Length: 426
Image 1 (spheres, one colour):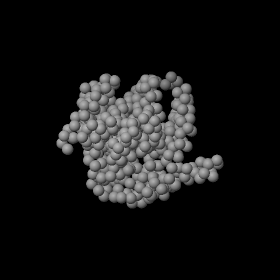
Image 2 (cartoon, helix red, strand yellow):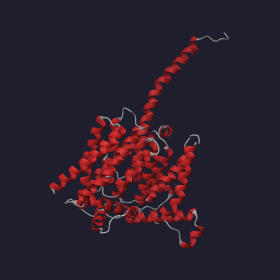
Image 3 (tube, helix red, strand yellow):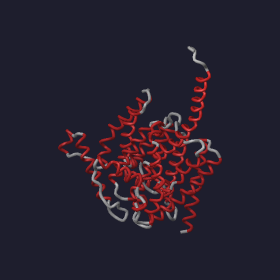
Image 4 (spheres, helix red, strand yellow):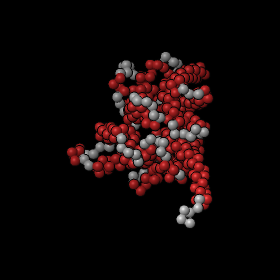
């Protein structure tokens, strides 16, 4: 066990440092930043090994993916990656398995590529936040990018969340970090494909948020915005039927020719309520299945973003999660208190699109999830948006505070001039 652990630490540390060096060279990171990246890498390694301990202690999806990869006899083809959800993760695990198959503990070593992809997502998210964060708030920037346990632990797993986080980070990086073309297009497309492959319904929520958010943006129409809207709308039309089928939202065969929005809505509600009922089992169950109703949208939103609360924790791990969730509860409360300033933020591109994605995804997933374990784990799909808005709000408030003294001085100066200069008519 000790030898396997040392092997794991050595391989992960070497490959991880190579990733850091490449990132630092490309973006000309300062020495202090590289030191923080290394500390973040060590924390990531610790969380990855912790996730492995949890995985071998009981039933886990990671074990299913490992068994599939280790028992597969035929070589992995590129076409096998053109799947979604569990099938895609199994194909990725089988693709990486030959790289670790010669180690004594290949199960532990298979965590490394998935965890490193999650770490790459953190580096990209850090670069994205740099474009909106206040210059004098580096500690906050490092904390939300690399050291929040929920984000680091769940994105270290041999499974969906590490790749999902990388996909979302790539999309945010492409839209917000302003990389030069065609890097931005490549990042957005690659990230979108990852999100679609891992969780197709989240890709649908993201498309919906962007389509509606583009209408709410208070900016003149340009070729770029029109082109983006048309591309998003075309993608929505091409993928929505496939995505609905993948997540089990189907209308009756006799109604397919005359399928209406209402019929798909009813099928969607049925799928959400079925998921809510089926997942409400075990020691992590919330205790009650949800009946989907528009009146309860705020409840679903709070359930997904802010639970478990301290009084809901029944296990040590739930108590630890509840303590960490206080951080997110305070962030959300801070955003709600300063909602007028959130609306005024002008340096977050497609701000309303991200906000709508956050709300729509949180409501639907919150309604369908009735298990604290899944809620805490899948929250990494929307937490980056909360961090983005929180960081942007901090900068907005700081800039507003800086402008106030100048405005007050200008008002005093103009008032003084009015008193000092006599009226021309007298």
